[in-house]
Length: 279
Length: 244
Image 1 (cartoon, rainbow over the protein chains, first blue to last red):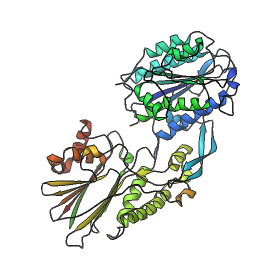
Image 2 (image 1 turned 45 degrees about the vertical axis):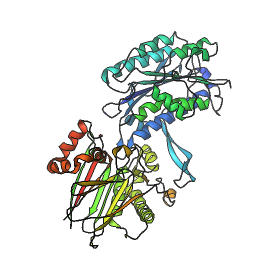
Image 3 (image 1 turned 180 degrees about the vertical axis):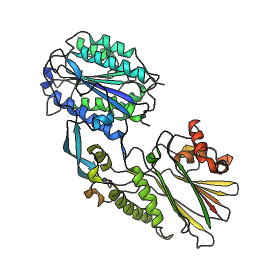
Image 4 (image 1 turned 60 degrees about the vertical axis):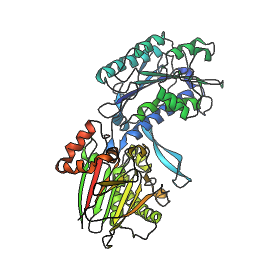
């Protein structure tokens, strides 16, 4: 069985976020109050905060995860690490290198059936950008090279995970070739997982985790992202079903026309596998 | 009279500072406790220590209702947990985590040494276990078989880590209680889940004898059981009590 490697400080896991920073990401995301770029950056910052939280112990933070955030389109034709100082960062170094920490309020269960207000610190590692075109191939090439190095150095680790959040078609070639190259790599625990989330600009019904091309609209772009997405390992199918998502066994790690709810679910399910394997 | 021997080790690969079980004993008063702090929460080691210390330092009367005993322990231990953490010096991410509170099992045993029949009461929340050995016979509590143990044991919660939350009561999960009597020569073993599960799996083979025969060499013996996959890699705590 794959996707069962225990994650520990000596056997960490790699998660790469790819964020579309093209001009059209400035449009509002249906279901939310803000632009696609803002909702995407908020969702990814929140997830990194969740990784930090999971890895935090009384004596500090344990490097169970190494994280990269690759932006593309911040300047036309450009892609690169959003985080300063290289593409991959151990979670402990991220915890101490936020852009800023914001105070936010949440309602939490009080342990005796009620709720109470609590203030917590929300780490921000990057701000939204919506500026240029969509050089997705350049971003995937960086991901491929990073995964190649990673899998050579961590041959028995939980397979790397790539989470690509975009609202447009690649403007620099065919990205499917690059994901095929990523799928040709592996650790002893399996092949890297590539997740693609297409953010919508209109309130059309989203298509979450389709299993067959026939479920997609007649859209070349949708078919391309579908083929670029991993077939979900059975564990992930289970996580989606726990969230009451109607999903088939051969579902792909892909959401077409995602609104805010699907974006949040997508990142949650996409990162549950390695979090469940923490030693 | 009671003779007590204790053994503990951190999960293989972790340092001794990362040990999140806890134990406390007062053989003169006949009070013992073990706890297993949940690794998913932070400051679980502090919480586990607060629970066992509170139990042993505040031995409950035999006539006190089980639930009231746990309620009292919980209240005192929560205050101790909260005051043990230097909240102002925590970096933002540690504060976020600590605010979620800490979780731990608790098993408390009290033996009435003034009573001729040496009555005992054992109370547990979660999967820390007690084994009562009389001659060649071993009774286990709260599980009779290793397959009864789940991956999601009941846990005591410290409550959330901010001032307003400390005043609020938190629910106490289901308490398992066992009463019994002890004879001279009887042994009691208190164990956290990983080694307790191994004892339950080998219940027909007098597992306490195997453990006692490695009394001087527990660390490498238990380490061997872990590396061979017989015991889950986890913190291990064992307390042996012999009635003499």
